[in-house]
Amino acid sequence: MSKNAKPNINQKIADLKDSMQWFYGDEFSLDQAADQYKKALGLAEEIQQDLTALKNQIDVIDKDFTKE
Amino acid sequence: MDVQFTVSEFLASCNQTLEYALGHVTVEGEVASFKINQGRWVFFDLKDEESSVNCFLPLFQLRAPLEDGMKVRVHAVPKVTKWGKFSLTVQQIMPVGEGSIKKSFELLKAKLEKEGLFDPATKRPLPEQPVNIGVISSTQAAGYADFIKIINERWGGLHIKVAHTGVQGLAAADQIIRAMRYFNERAEVQVIAIMRGGGSADDLAVFNDEALVRAIAASKIPVITGIGHEIDQSLADLAADFAASTPSNVAQILTHDRQAEITQIKQLLLSTKKYITERIKFVADQNHQAISDIKYQINQRLQKQQLDLEQTMQLLESFNPDQVLARGYAILTGQVKLGEIVKITTLNQTIQAEVKDVQKR
Image (cartoon, rainbow over all chains, first blue to last red; front, side, top):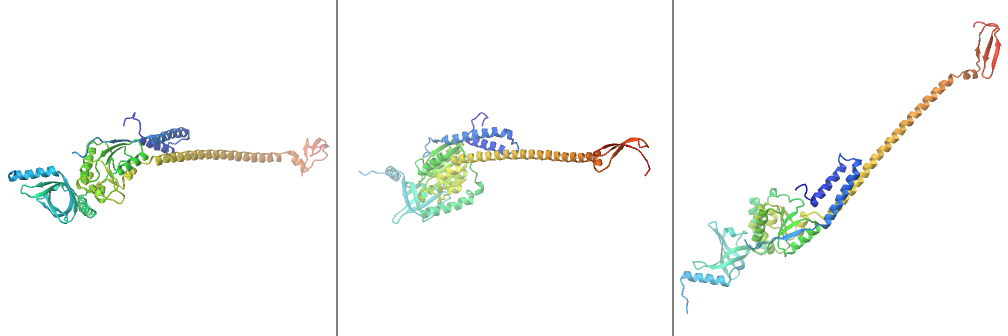
């Protein structure tokens, strides 16, 4: 996937979980905690909206499998 | 007027008439006198209580093991051979009835197990949260509808490609095999799900077809099956990388539940918020403790200095002449010589006195 491609829902969830890990890691600092938390909260809200709104694309293949 | 034929013409005419009148036929009966000739040709009689008909097929078209006494359904073309013998040229055959299906199932299972087709070591893990899913099922089947309903409820953003095939009957196995080939040739999907809802042993027998089972085992793309109900087990299930219990269960295996995911994210945020609050409280407690320590140190120093000052003052006080005078002593100043005037200081008085006598002690 290119860097400019829009992340899909699974990538967003993985990103959120990664950003949550920051709070429990050695790099945690109180100075940055509020900003990091706001970012995570924003991402979480985006994921929630995506999860609620996303539809599946279902295509029935246009091929007759009764024939070879 | 009688039509005159050569023997060959007569048999050809018979076959033409048969083809015109019957075409392909489906006949059910019990297998008798089953034999394989030259490792290539299968012969048996199909019979019921009163009648019997010869059947013939090439060995490679035999898709399920046969034994005398098994009940089968054949899809065949009736023919009169050049020796004048009437027979059915079998194109498809499958066991019918619970007993025959079970017997055929056990025979084929033992054969394929021996070949390692069901070896757990060959099973591949299904992709985690696949986005591109290939489905092989009948779009008219209740099981397919269940799958679509559940997967739409559980997750979104998926690309599901559906190969509409039969899921029961003699022709279904080949259709499913073609759909398997279709997905494997294109390699667009991450997983193939083969599904059908519950049914009788006859309905589900297609999933014990040897060629289909081999196609599933050979698939380059991982295969999940959801065939019948929880109690049903087919050879297709055994050959698949994962056998879900039902089509709905396939949807559950392949996707996370969006509501559960939202709840988990909320809980994650909540626990992180709690953790941050605890970290802040910890730092605040540390600050309070530091301030308290500093206050204590300052107090300690102040107390010590206070004590030192008091001791110095006591010492200083001990040097005060009034302290000595208070004890009854006096201070004498001036020349202590006969006739000299000296000054005597007591606690409360200053006295001038003349020296009258001086003696050594």
